[in-house]
Image 1 (cartoon, rainbow, N blue to C red):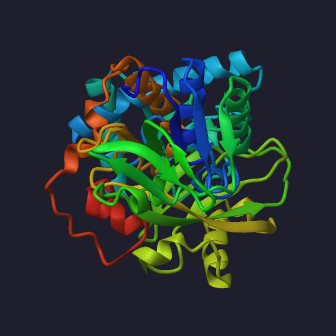
Image 2 (cartoon, one colour):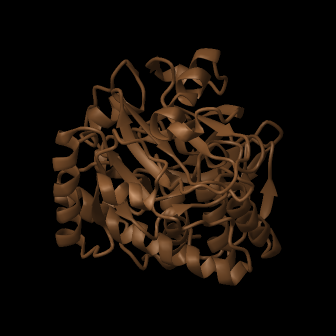
Length: 402
């Protein structure tokens, strides 16, 4: 039986991409079992700031921006539709996003990127703000911030609300959700998927979607997805302040943060204490020094908040690919094996790629072609990944640091 003909499909991974894929497959009438080795949204989907930025990073090649644009634009449209469909706003706050410049060189770069994005994608919303306009928009930002790329409709959401809402809807439509059930091995016979081995049983299936992001390489090692550890700190609740979702390079490190939460907390993220080997990128512990370094981002950017207390810190592991794009589609050498993994910013991609992959499996074609994200695009390529790395080193390696 062909994977689109009505048999069971197993989705491995209980983060945003996995539950979205399960939701859309269930909505299309397919029998779905979702496996998650821990709890729903316990990996990267529950350890990020929920940033929804239609274009992040500093790609200087127009073709790279063009590759991303159709997916992130449609993801934004789908999110707005889900708010109405689910009668839940998922904590979405569209207060805008900033890509901040600290040097004259960055000012020139961001001016060029803004112009390029408007010309190449038709993105007439993106704009450049000089330092004065930036502080009129957000008076808390320090004067050493010289300007920023700005998009008013970007922002952030509360990841747990979105992921769990999608999971509940998938279950209501018949999906079987098995948390604390690890997909240990995908089984094949004559080049076809036949099942998945878990700690307690073998589950027969005709198709598998690997949506475990950084952990996906454990199941499909031939697709080059590497783990990437990042950190976050959360402040105590404070009165409403004009803080927006942001990204920047500060003291040689890429940092980011989300707007203020509904409860008044501010989340800021950044790199670990030092670059680490690949196996260490899965470490979810946080050292005291790492907490101190990431906490220092707040007074650097927002001096008036220097006395705000940090109440929580954590680490999470994202996925990275050689070109910075996720891998979404059929894994070529196997019949019935699909992948949706390799996301460094899943909140801006997860809904649309879950939907498009479900269309690809059931209907054989997706409403937006997935050719750009084909997992097989790296076939026969050899990559010399850095032996130790962090977010900034990988951004340089991928050519996305500007």
